[in-house]
Length: 295
Image (cartoon, rainbow, N blue to C red; front, side):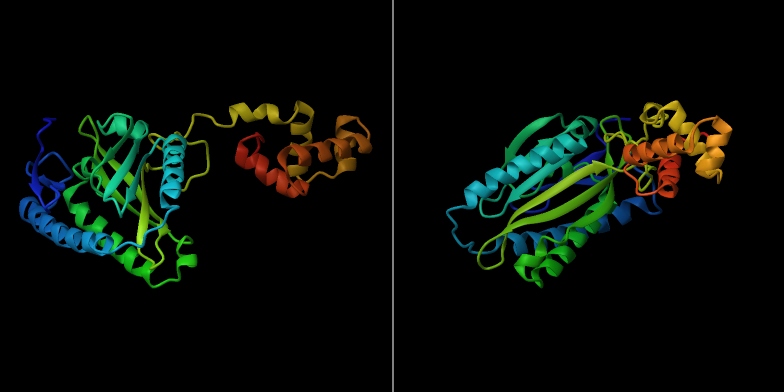
């Protein structure tokens, strides 16, 4: 796929750019692609200006502890980035700057890794990679979230965050579904937003599925139960298999030619290892972990 799938357009006086879809084949097609996308770009520009004004057109209340909180928020951003292989964008409204940390997702998008500070609250490099049809929707959600948060008492605002999903172009031309989350972290004395944290992470077909997940592509690890078989001894797994089939301790003791007291000791050990309160719960947990062959 050719690299030049996009033209860039200047949408405000800070030279923030959005990707303008110009060639079929770069993204999943829609009917009347060109007209549809140009209309979406116009909507995005209008909504972007509105959001930019609502975030920045304030006289922020001075706070001598703000710099310390900002530096702590940078640490939070870096930790999110490392833990989720994500991209974290910490925007500073009073300074109109952003601190951006690139996890391995940055490499997959062709942005590299590491961290940088840019003179804008808008993550322009990332915005260029968002599907044009999703840009206006992204900004519309952010406007709605800001409006929602602004109506709440400041001490309740941290209970909420925004998430939505969008398409982004990968380094090789592949289309990634990305989960975008926004957290408003800090406010001045008048309730104006001071710090915003945006997180970008890949979402795959396993979203919502329990299992061991590879954070870069959202795939499940192969045979996750393999490493869990040793969690219980062979004898404990055998006893739990019999418990799951409805056998009582006395019946299990007779089948295995051991004492009932020994069976009960094994059952207590199973509960301890699986952090369960009773054997019925242990059967369910072991089944989900793939420990029981009959489950």
